[in-house]
Amino acid sequence: MNVTPVITECIRLVDEQLHSSQREMGDVRSILEDAIARLIRDRSSATALQFQDISDQLLAHASARLQSVRLEIGRVRDGLDARREAPAGVAHAMYGNLLALAKGNAKPVHAADLEPGPIELF
Image 1 (cartoon, rainbow, N blue to C red):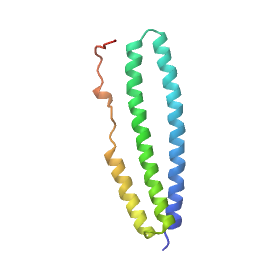
Image 2: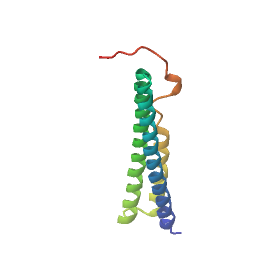
Image 3: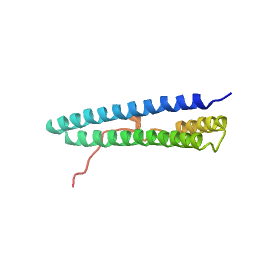
Image 4: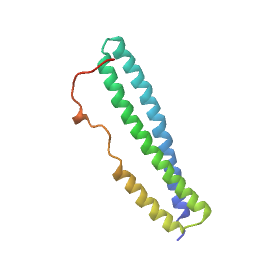
């Protein structure tokens, strides 16, 4: 059984999801920038800075996860194009690597970790 067309279709679907996620993250960044600007205008600067820091960390983490998936998909595409590995081996490696990515990427900031506190301004 030739699994190459199935893998190729999986890559196409993952690429679509990656592009969609990247666009959505751009939309979120715009919304956050607007919200932070409004907080600063309303004289909630400390809250705005904390909110901006947390949201920047989360968006950077999400971007890193997307990049990891892109790299894995590139590795799979290259493996299929170069015919270095059998398609079934490529599929198994992709599955294992994507599982490892899913398990190894915990959120850097948890809502339970957040507490109001003092802020130092220089």
